[in-house]
Length: 485
Image 1 (tube, rainbow, N blue to C red):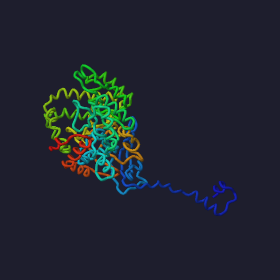
Image 2: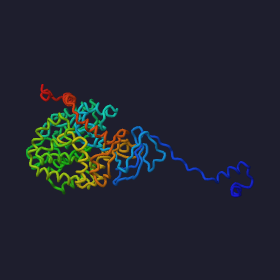
Image 3: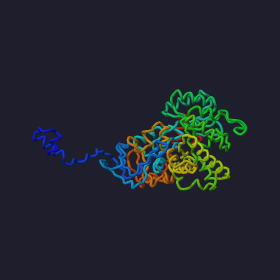
Image 4: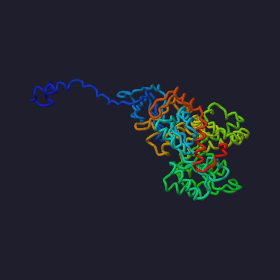
């Protein structure tokens, strides 16, 4: 009590003396703020991909509420949720994005989720994709977030396909974009055969309307002797200056940008130009590797496990391609594949933003599964596992304008997360088969993912036919022969 008197002075009331005495007793520790959520994931390693090196957090606790991450903590103190999942020291990463797919029907969507793909960029839009994307966001359809281009804009030529919206003149190109805007599409995909007048009109209209452009680099009309004896009508560097959202396929860049030469020095020079312009590249190494796989197996790979998830209608149209590649000499295809992998590594070294994409949904590129295979190929090409995963997480979010909203494991990020059974930074193969998934804030264990995958094998041919033929008719394709009328 003398200490209290000394501290507060000689004249103190009795009540003050009592308060001073109480002040000397041990005080209770402050309690942590209570945070209540819908889902708590305990004891996981989290990896952030925002920086050039990984942000790793061991033994973390991730609290989810209303489809977003509420907090990531080093302790469970103060955290509570209706559902608790024990991560058991496994690794939690952002949901994966496949930046180059082809969706033909809603049946295949569950396959993407079953392999941890929580967002896709569809690269051959049809009108049915727009309401489908809305239904996914409303929770009416279980599938990854769907970003889509409009129908592919192309001109007649060696790479023309039935589902392309064909334009030749500037006037036709502007009319096609008017139609796409009116339909509700918000990004444009261009293709190899576009004539110069059509391509220049597309870039002008897209710039005026603020619409991103992506796709193959247009070459103009292909004449005899191109590319070996003379350059393309539209030079690759002209296209590069038009600031695409991304340029698709290293294979196509080698064809156009290098005039199909396997020249590493030229590839490095081109990589520096691409990096300086800041244009991302979707590698799609898997798309070419699967051509090689079909050639090596003399066609057997077209029916390997997982191909039952490919759309049945689309697969019927692939029969001539299957036959061609099944009879192809695999040696030159293997040489090409090795060079494309080398170019991917050179691009990474020189600072090109690489995106993970697969061409899933066509040929034998299995929905969902293909992305894990692409990550393995990127790592095999020379990228670190971290760089490969970054191409499927943070980099797509930057390109699509959603950085800070998704592709991250932090407070405020979308609760689209993949639980991997081991550390993918030590072994990228770990990313090929998730242990579980958080999608739109809901936990899906391995059994739930297996059910989604199994359901994706159930085809609806009539619905696919309506999706495709109905869409083609809307932009002027005569579908009577295709439909057997």
